[in-house]
Amino acid sequence: MNKITGFSVLTTGEGERVTLSYSVLDADGNIVSTNNRKNYVVLDEDVLTAIATIRTDAAAHLES
Image 1 (cartoon, rainbow, N blue to C red):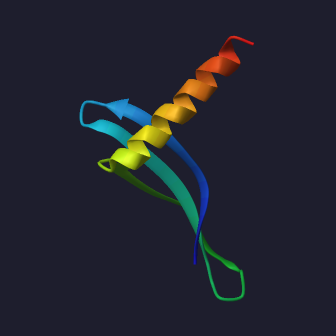
Image 2: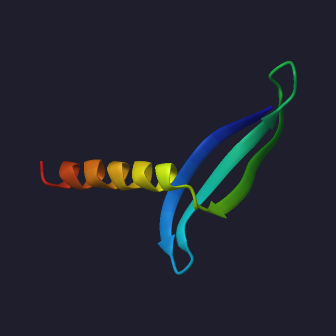
């Protein structure tokens, strides 16, 4: 089983890129490997909208 341990969204020349790190666990919950990484460019409009919502919320916290 893969367990996401962190993620971020970056604006790049290709578009919005999600980077994530994850650990792999066996059926008993034991860690098999850590600090695995993956990234992809977001193409789904619903996900792009969700990213925009999170950015708006984060910006609002800068003003408080």
